[in-house]
Length: 296
Image 1 (cartoon, rainbow, N blue to C red):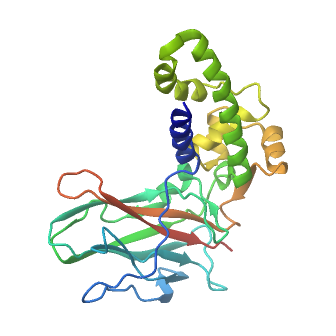
Image 2 (cartoon, rainbow, N blue to C red):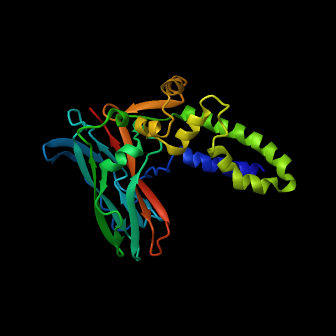
C-alpha cells in the first residue's frame, strides 16, 4: 500500500512543479572541446537595445549531445531592461557529437522554480511571445545546429494577462498535505467497498477522485489543487475557469501559499526545452535552457 501511495504522490509532485528543469552541471569538455556561445552585450534589434549574457553549454547522453548555453539572462544590465514592446533574440546550439543521426524537438516550456528569484511566467500568456525558428532540427553525426529563439513582448498587454498567480513552496507543501488527507480517507472507502481487491481499484481511480474536486471541505483546497495542476496562470485564465475569487486568492497570498506576479514589473523566467528523439521518434534525453528576464 505504501508503495502505491508513494507512486501516486510522486506523480502529483511532478504535476505540481510543472515540467522538470535541468540545471547545468559543470561544463563537460569531450575530445576536441565544445563550441561555446560567447557573451554578447548591447545587441541592437530595430530601435531596441537590450543585454544578453550566456553561460557555457551543458551535456546529455554521457557527454555526447550538448545543448547550450545553459542559462540566458535578458535585460540584466542597468538601463537595458526589457519592457512592453521590446524584442530579444538569441541563438541556442545543439551539438551532436555521436556517430548517429539525431532528431530533436525544441519548444517553449513553463518553468518550475528559479533559484535566481525570477517568478514563473504564466504559460497561457507568454507562450505566444516566444518564437522558435527550427522546432524539429535533424542533425547528422558530428554536427551542430544553431536555432534562433526570440522573445517578443507586445506593446499592449491586457491587465488580466499582466497579473498572474502560482504556488509558493509553502503552498505546494500545503497542497501535498491536502492530497495526503484526501487519500487517507479514500483508502478506507476503497477497503470497505472492494475488499481484497481495493488496492488495484484505488490505483486506477484515485487520481480521478482527487482531480474531480474531493477537496472542497478543506479551505482553499480546491483552488490550491487547481493551481498545482496548471502551474502559473494569468488572472484571465483563472477567470475563464471560474477560480478568480479575489478574497480567496488574497488570503492564500497572505498565508504564504500563493504569489501574485506582474509581467511588466517583476523579473520572470521560462524554459526552452530540447528533447532528443533519436531515430525512432521516442524521447531519449532532454535538456532545458533557462531564460531569465529582467523588466524595468
